[in-house]
Length: 235
Image 1 (cartoon, rainbow, N blue to C red):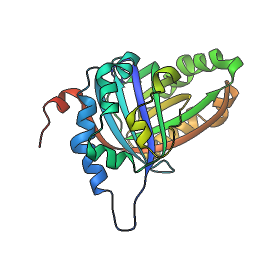
Image 2: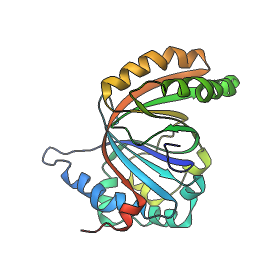
Image 3: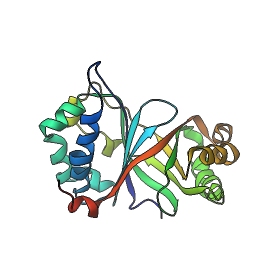
Image 4: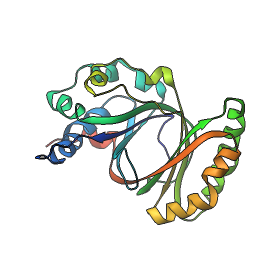
């Protein structure tokens, strides 16, 4: 299994930037405080940060967890309700935030790719089983035969675990959006990824196999770290 564990927290967001500021403080907060803090929560196994290459939201983070219960743990909830002053300042800059807890339904591959496609899907209610079977038994295994593909994953949201009335959520400028299904395809570069998606995982194919709507965004990897690295990190 390419993804570590059976749970995934996905966060996609823009960042407000004033005329006289840049993103140095934001990136430094993520690198030195927020990322290590999250990865020190028991059950958080690996984290990744991405920047969009073709659309908004501009940034995203994926946290691989042992299971969905990790995202409902007391330790994690304690963090969500007690953000540091630096976290409060940067969370207030989040815009257009989508925060979703997913159960990993399918994951295969080896390692972490530098390029990521996120295919956001809303399934037809009457065809959820058909769509899931097509993804896990056909489309995802097939795309892994492409020599440029590093990983392929199907993630299905859990609204109950996702919805948390926390201090951090209240700091952000608007209620978080929640995704439905997310298909993650990893590759070594954007062109290889685009070619594989066009060939094996088109939006038309998604709709033909039970998707009510489907859209795709592409992202480049900025930072990847494991829980073990975070436990030993200090400046």
